[in-house]
Amino acid sequence: MSEPVLKKTLVRDESFAGVTYHIAGELVPVLQIALTSTPIFFEHHILLWKSPSTRIGVKAVKGLLKRAISGMPILLTSATGPGQIAVSRDGAGQIVPIHLEPGQAIDVREHQYLAATDQVSYSVTRIKGIMNWVFGGNSIIVDQFRAGAAAGIVWVHGFGNVFEIVLGPGESIDLEPGGWLYKDPEVGMKTLTQSLSSGLFGSAASFFWNRLTGPGRVGIQSMYIPTLAVEA
Image (cartoon, rainbow, N blue to C red):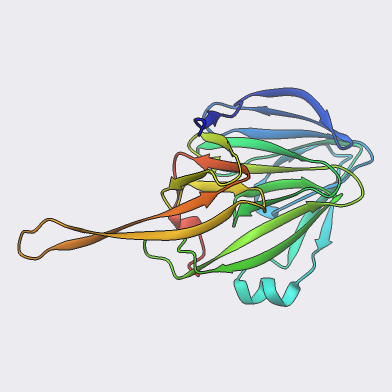
């Protein structure tokens, strides 16, 4: 198995899917996007600044009942050019762009996508049998993004630094449950638990992790903020 590789922290003049974007900032990074004919959508509380010509609106998403039950936002903010817009999350970390070719999809940890181009569909699903953090339940909610007939981009925010590993068929990696940030849909995930005992006074503790099995990409964040997660 290859080692996880640190993703680029700075991006300048990257063009894809109808937009040009820049990522800068060593502590709390900022994503700046030049909009022409391709709109983007994002969570409303992350807007940092925009050009006066950039129009802000509302984007409805599919699965409203599922999102409402899960405690997820049922309306998203959209931005339409021409003009510039910048977004950032209130937390130290790293912004990673994920380019999706037509038909490609990516699974993202809930509450950690930053923005996406309008060609990308956005839905949520609950994966049962997975423990998302030490004091969580037995399932997690995952944001799912899929490019349709045209290519698109999803930008995600990872806390700390973000590493990526590409797993071959049957290859696995064990991650601290708060460590995974995104994965290809083909990557399987399950929770493993081990009981640890010191033998003193009969004391014992449980140690558990998520085992992700390829083929596909897995994004790893070096820091986890559990207060931003919804307990399943």
